[in-house]
Image (cartoon, rainbow, N blue to C red; front, side):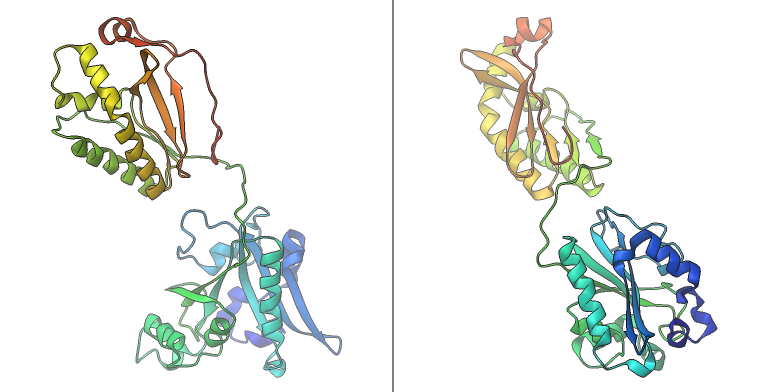
Length: 343
């Protein structure tokens, strides 16, 4: 049946062999289905679980995402159901079989609490328009209803959204090797906590440039958080006594007066880092900053989390210079903080 749907020898990438089917069942039997009529298989759907990580809409190829159709890269902990293939015997089309198989995918995604379903869809009729428009324009016009495509029009009717068109996806003369990137987002998905396998920490090498206002300080801090977030960091760590830079515009006569003046910026500092951690969705260790506790000052590091919470840890073992020149005293206890990424 699979070979009837893909009769061209150029489509050998997606032609299943017995070894393929056995591998699918071995790795993810729950995601493999067939439709049977008169004891004969007339349709099938093959799927695996994957994790797209921080870039869920990145371009890919069919051989790459399915490990050449063998599903060796099936991820049991993946949050995305990848639809590797769905085929219906030409003699049994327009009977609702394809719709039933797509519904089975959506039911599986909801039952397993998966974030999404992703497909690389054929542009089945694109070869008829290839001399008139690009594959991107063709897909857009099908999406808008100006054109009808045997595969894409059906997939859009099943609630999938067109994200992009991918070149060199699979050998397919009809699509000229292109495919649509289609996504169905599970409306019942509930975020699940899973201990990360790794985290990325950005340690900021911060230059103490002369500034003339707190706004200048905030702009420099924002730059580093923006860059770290762009690299996919989970944590951004600033250096000790980060706010010493503010002394460049504070007018005082002694070091102790300067430290005492810095403590007045605690509220502004908290507002800055809470705003940044929410905006960029990264945890921030805001270096350290002198804070008043009762009748004394401590050198305190604060962890800011994207939910807006703040967690403080005073420095325990201070230097003689901190004690004598700045009047800073050490903290009394060590705290451990749980975050969504690490402890």
